[in-house]
Length: 127
Image 1 (cartoon, rainbow, N blue to C red):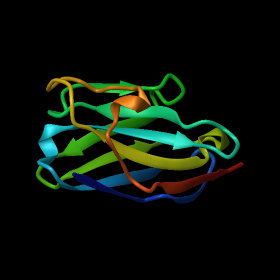
Image 2: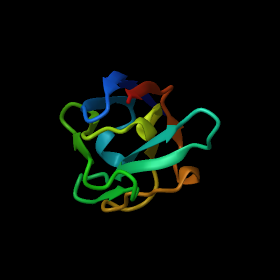
Image 3: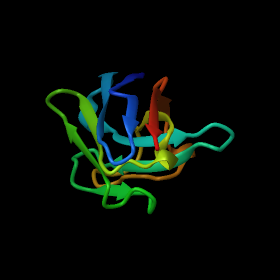
């Protein structure tokens, strides 16, 4: 079992920044990849970013490339999502998820590959 708790969401003006955190407990943290997904009102949940078990491989949605950065601190059992140059279209509930299968360098983007999910944190970007 893996428990995931997100934090760091809030209200920010367009052009601003936020850093989300995903704190994990349960299984050995370095044994699974972690991804971030988001769901805006009236829309389906979509992939944002993912990072492999060893942190050596990252994967981003085209819509956030160059603006968002994912990293992990295995000593703190935490994954971070640094979000810069935020735009109103980034408004959504952001959730992190853990993928317990796959290799050391695997950073999946498909939701069905993830086994455990957090409750999410709201990010609102005002124009």
